[in-house]
Amino acid sequence: MSDELPADAAGAPGDGISQGRLRRAAPLLGLSARTAGELLVGGLRGGRSGADATELHVRTAERYAELLGRSKGALMKAGQMLSFATSAPAVPSEFQSIYQSALSRLCGDAPAMEPELARAALERELGCAAERTFAEFDWKPLAAASIGQVHAARLHDGREVAVKIQYPGAAGAIGADLANAQLLATFLSLFVGGLSSRRLSLDVRGVAREMGLRIAEELDYRREAAYQAAFAAHYRGHPFIRVPEVIGELCTERVLTQGLARGLRWSDALAAGQDLRDRWAEAIWRFTYGSFARICMINADPHPGNYVLHDDGSVSFLDFGCVKRFRREQVEMMDAIIGACLRGDAPGTWRACVEAGFWRSSDPVSPEEALAFWREDWAMLWADRRFVVTPQHVARRIERRCSPDGPSANALRHVQMPPEYTVMGRVEVAVASVIAQLRGGAHWGAIAAEHLQGARPLTEMGKRERAFFDQAHRAGHGVRR
Image 1 (cartoon, rainbow, N blue to C red):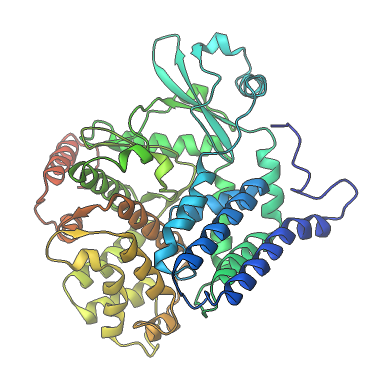
Image 2 (cartoon, one colour):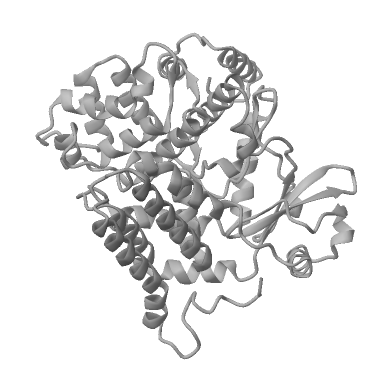
């Protein structure tokens, strides 16, 4: 990888910015037109299936993965974000796994830096020779992605660490893309529009804006280190949630050093027994929504590459470059909505939604419609027994939420999603998609009721977690149970 900005990231020398931006979008325009044409000729945009349809969707998914991989910058990051959440309703449910599999390669197949370039970048950031800081350093990366790559190393005191080094030029390439406010919106419009002829209710510009903010934040490793340290402090000693400790003195804007987590990667974990996959699914759920409830923060990049899974059912959570912080009153407003739904309280759900800003009191939406709007999304919480989350369940959920003709069409027509909550929608879908890959099953409603209603934990993991936070509370750590 070169130190120089890729030639197509901001236009070749002598080109104006507009020409550079056009060149970035042109391949997307060409691929979208080609895809739409092939689907139309084949009669497949209406959702027909069969061998011909499968072959065409495989070919289309590979083309998008190849184009986004070559594009680098923000386009590659956007492809990564789409890789761990279903692309419905743009893609019929039977073809979801094809696109997910192709785009998931963007999370781990990036070409690595040459050792000499990695060493130069590391030593420039730390201001000293690598040997002065590390007793051992493996210059072959553990992982390489769009912004940086991770190396295993050992400090002179014996601690094993993971060192993330940002690619030289990554900030410039992504900054150039994000300066083009239309680029991500164009990508999303073409990706969805090229695959489906259906009229979808989707705020493309809003989604693109949110993607851009999250991508820009990932460039600052000091910010990421501060957030990771906060999560690590909260979960230190937790029975099944692990957050590697940050080595603060070895973190800079473009280098992040943390404890090394060893365990199963995602592809290996999917072959494990169902009992173990259920435990991992529960750990992921509790980490995501427990963090929101207790410390008003949520890790907004919950894709499988950010998990290391262990044989005892515990999970190590990595990569805190994309974190959203909420005010306590915002958390309480969301709790009030879901809590009212759990009770089947339509008037209470409507009042909580109006207070949170989802609808105005004058909107022609009935309390029953407001209740149905949330209950249909969260079917896993309303089940009175074990509920297995599947990719089909997640696809139906997204399709219903995005469909202007679905059962919640009137509520959807008038809903005004407050900007602070837009990230929550993406995280909810992403976490559900991750759990669906595990085919994770649990009594999810009982788990949610622990926080929302103070219910007694029913699962073994819930009992262990309650004991942990009760002890922390008694010790005066200010932890919300």
